[in-house]
Image (cartoon, rainbow, N blue to C red; front, side, top):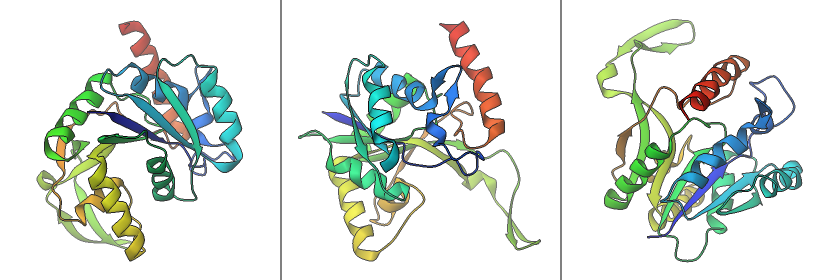
Length: 230
């Protein structure tokens, strides 16, 4: 089994209210992206890493990566305008004979090595698996400013990353989506369209996606806790 990881890092910081890519914002002096890559570099089941970067930041990301001292091969490639385009680009740069591919948000630096390994092992067995957490809040379906219904939360989960698939399955899903001109919000949604079951591996509330200024505040707390635990 050869496992490649695609770190989707081609997004911008609009919700972060900055014109700088949010994955390059500093978290205790180090770009969020570097914190994230470190988790995959430390995971024993990951063989190589592809980082998809915004066109205008490819050189900067390449310099950051080359200076970070990673043990594994980390290749920086140009991403696309949308996440799906970026992951498609990453798929084209996987090393030969990569049988499993893990796709992860660049701005989720608090995934654990154990979580990465668990979801990879599950995908190896089932073909497709994602990290997810149960919903604890009551969820309403709305039409503009009015409630339409209350959804049964015992059947709902919040999808996280990494989302991990056998490479041939994910490539087929991307080919089908391109043919149908379909854009999904995550890789699992593309695989689901094939009718392939996607297994759920229990994630953690700490595996936050840093997208807003308040997330940075929480991230600093989590980072200090990680350092203390080490």
